[in-house]
Image 1 (cartoon, rainbow, N blue to C red):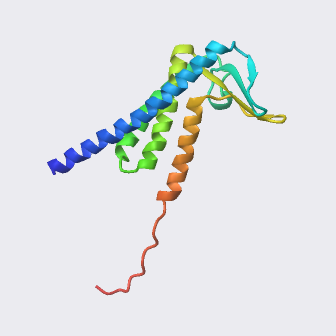
Image 2: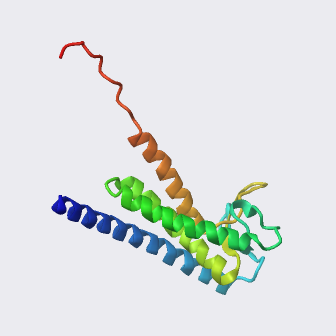
Image 3: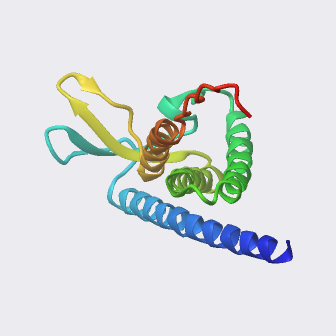
Length: 177
């Protein structure tokens, strides 16, 4: 029993370590790209990169798609609290499901994205967004590397749920013992 518990703790530590490495890479890329954009552009500036991508510098005090951006300021603390809860909950889920690599990878991306945007909220009071995709007259709201990691993590979670969510139908019993 003690040996099994030690192996389990070792596995948990290994899974958590790998998850935090992935999350740290996401945070580093997110913060580095935001720094580069803030150095290169002024607020509201837009630079055409391709026919479908502009680099912009906007500060989003709200959530996804600027949800609650126009609120009176209380949303900053609200989103910080949600992010802190998410970091704790995701960490717990990684340890609990350490034997599911795709699930852990998806959670690691969510973790890195949550931390990347949390840093912005704490330091800048708003999230830096700079990738602005468009097609003809249609524009997607600006986003960043952290948002991308969160989106990819969410897609992987959905994919993983279909892959691992299969339940084998019970085999009919013959009634024999």
